[in-house]
Image (cartoon, rainbow, N blue to C red):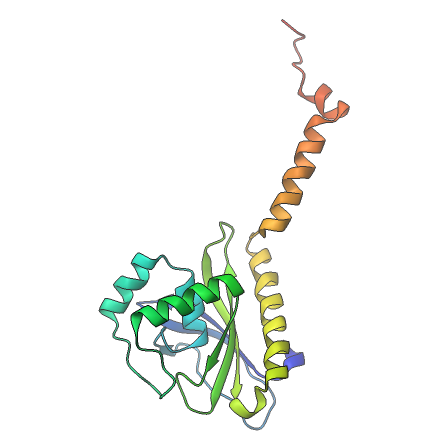
Length: 191
């Protein structure tokens, strides 16, 4: 992530909020600073929305009922239906760009980290001043954050659907080969 020169955060859901559990600061003189241990609302942060996108609609509705959707800036989405539509878009795209929803002048690109079962267990993001998040930079950041999130997910045992299909095909081929057949025969002979 050093190649993008923006601050990187790792977050999880805790007590209905987004909890910052790790960060790697960039060397830029102007940077965004959230401290490890800090909490933010999930509905108005890139990492929070990515974490929400991994929840069921029932879980999201329950969270909305207990945690109010307060406007932090003029860009914050506070309508539940609009938030649900945005979360569906995140599920399809695999990333999210926060457009100054928590703080004016701050943008963020985030992606989900999945555990072995495919469930979203954490989120990773790049945050920085809006002026550095040009359309070209955002495309590059999205590509990098998605790549990094997938690398971490694989370390946690996640196997993407495309790889799962390849693995099953390999297992079927190995199982049906002549060597595989003799390996499966009973050591006691046929009955």
